[in-house]
Length: 337
Image (cartoon, rainbow, N blue to C red):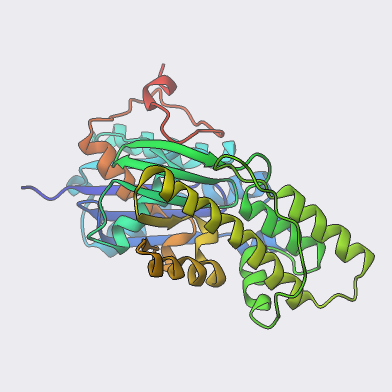
């Protein structure tokens, strides 16, 4: 069987990335140009600045990925850019570049859902992982439990009703003076603290989440007592939100009977959450986690997801547009004119 080479392009937020992946699992190159230092001084991502930097970086990043993989453009079988969800201007840069490249070198265009990309990061790290499994998606824009029925078939079993977990991390970090990006800074400082601060948890009858209550509780607590130990506050926050995640994933296992769990998204890099989820293996649940470098936004995961979309025949045409609020499992055809 012929090897399939996929070029992934990712520009949904503040990373400009291009990657070459063989057969959906073998990374030949994965180039990431991050803008974290640029946005750090603003306390978060500024969409206009992100878009401008994507424009400045995209060509060089793609060319570097091709060169590092030691291939030429003619050897690419499919071009897979992210088309949503994400920041509209940022998405437009990567998708437009991908469409132009597809047209110029006459290679199929395969639009990729960014959330599917995060799930597919596990296929790169774990060559043995195959559907069906449950995925605990935790990122800045999404918190949901996804039933991965097949490589291109997904069902959302539960999702956040308000803040995504990554959004809560960033807001808490900003309020207590840690700055941006909040997730890694809370993770590092929390390792020095003790989980001695009681925080509220909302219990739902279904598999949905809510993080606005705990976020507001921490903000109010800190404003009333700014002398609180920040390390204790960080680890207490991590412990509480992790208990919510674990409780819901246990309920999902009971509901579906599936005992294979994959973590995905930027927050899956959190050391406390990774440690607590691994404890579920004592209950006979198999846990998969992406390598740390594949948890945050990167094009290798997009190329991996694009490979399975390509095999599924989900070829896009040049009318494909960006979809900033794209949901997982939505049909790409509805976004082509």
